[in-house]
Image (cartoon, rainbow, N blue to C red; front, side):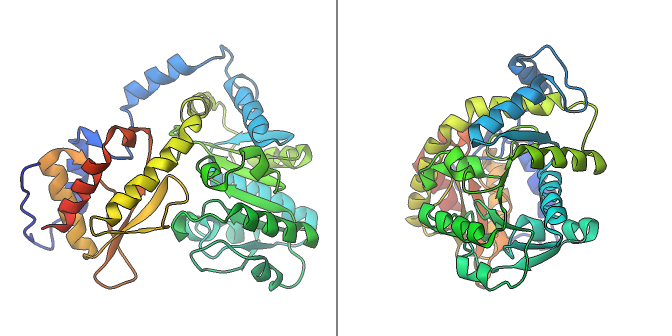
Amino acid sequence: MDSVNYATTDASEDLRARRKAAAADCTRWLSGQRAAPADALRALADAATSDERDGYGTGGEVELLEQEVAELLGKPAAVFLPSGILAQQSALRVFADRAGTGRIAVHGLSHLLVHELNALEEVHHLRLERMTSEPRQPRPDELSAIPGKLAAVTVELPLRDGGFVLPTWDELVVFAAACEERGVPLHLDGARLWESTPYLEHSLAEVAALATSVYVSFYKGLGGLSGAALAGPEDVIAEVRRWQRRLGGNVYTLFPYAVSAREGLRTVLPRMGELHQRAVELAEALQGTGFRVFPEPPHTNSFRVYAPRPAQEMELAAVLRMEATRESLSYTWQAADVPGWSWVELVVMPGTLQWRIDEVSKGFGELLGG
């Protein structure tokens, strides 16, 4: 690309508006590109396999999806829901009602705590007990340090707000055994579980076998429209369906979401190993361009990129580059804990594979070079 002038502009300039305008004009995306609505709908029509429409989540593509998810995760039953928040609220409420206690052990950086407006406490009156808030997976000793009766223990695989970090397989096995010894159900927040198996080196069913229930998402790594599934014992799933109705998640039809979810399972899931390998390669290349990455190497197809430059300067450089090249290279840069540093998430999707590794490292390097 031609040299870009990264001179400082007026600090009051609305970079968010400029980013949005530049993004709308982009013709190439490193990650995060979504098809235009009309194109997405046409693709769904081509991907549909059932002539039957579901009615309130029964039959058609929804039923086929639930069967596929239950088989993939090796669980007796699964239910498709509009959102992961609904899926996990319902599952944890079921465990709490059965245990006669509302105490749930969670990680302090869990999505349940960070992104859901305190829903478990406000709506279900559950009490969340933090095992740790460190950017790593929780340990059995941290679980044992929480006294008294627990309704459930949750583990997020990977821990997104910790930097997409996973435990090793042996660590996960030991943690699951600690839950079993205590007689507490283990629930897996697997919003990105599809992306985790290359690092864990075990199948989805083998990972899911360590837990009582598992939640998975369809719009993140698989690129679906929206939606989630919860898999587990038949009696738990039956109770979750009742909570789905109570919480307003039993909508008239869900077939577009189910079609896109099944297409993601068919076309993207088999490529998770390839996406993880490219993430490892990109992380190595970026480290040689003046950036730091975490984890090193990445545990999934997603990781954090840290830059030795303030967030406002990095964001301005990124937006200027978008405007000059019509390429979207990164999401919005955020301030890091270390003063003068910033960070951004890099998510490797199928479209990312169309970029050469040297193109990515050169593009990121330009953000530091101004």
